[in-house]
Image (cartoon, rainbow, N blue to C red; front, side):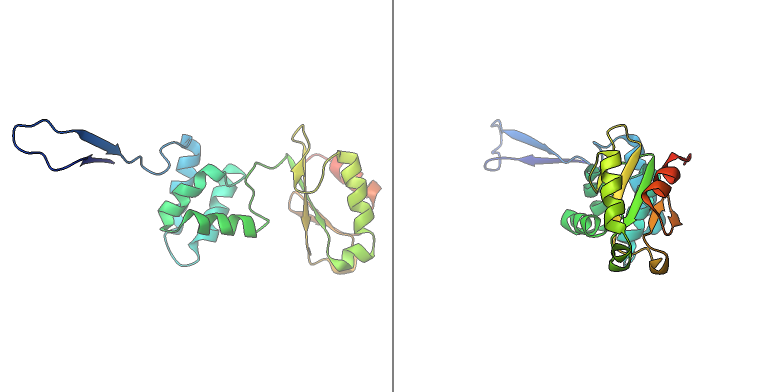
Length: 183
């Protein structure tokens, strides 16, 4: 979209005028085509309906593996929201990532029931084994470690979810065995 404006006082006939051309870049024009298309498709499919933001964010993350911060302005523009509103939802819900995850995603339950049966020891073991902290990915991109505050498997704690699959009564040795399996 191109918009032309003029600076200074309106020109009198016969006099040269200073001309300033303000160029308004279309939102998302600076995004890589894959990211731009992911956002356009999500917004088109979900539409600007109430509560559509969450669905759009899930669709973008499903396609890109994350919601890159640079897509926020285009998502906001497509849904007629502010960037702050979009960023607020992304930062509030832990399931939304701003960086791509590792090849395997380990969600470690840190709720009270799991803590009572050894989740903290399991977390310590896993952090030492992988050499990473929660919310991070191993340098080789192999594993992402995320906390979760209840997997709904309290009777079988400590619980972990690996690549979307729930496991209960997990021991450090059992977790190593699970991570050694192919994704």
